[in-house]
Length: 71
Image (tube, rainbow, N blue to C red; front, side):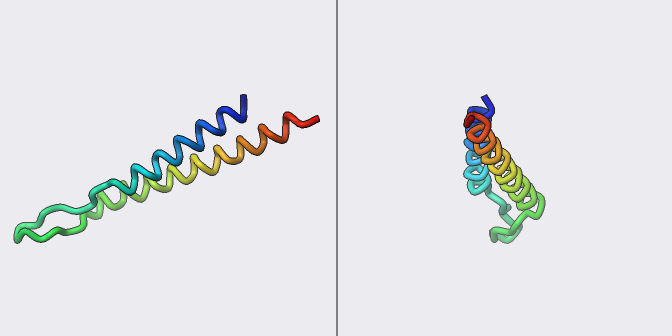
């Protein structure tokens, strides 16, 4: 059971990492130029970091689940 939960967390973490790269962190300025929005960049960074943490926890669960099944 721990191994299955680990794989699910790992997949969810990978999904969040991939989604974070699709964020648009720019706005259209008054003169038509694209400018970086610090709030959106922060959100992108937090989603990326959260995905990495979920992936790490999932990896730990998978390894622990594999170790616990062995006699």
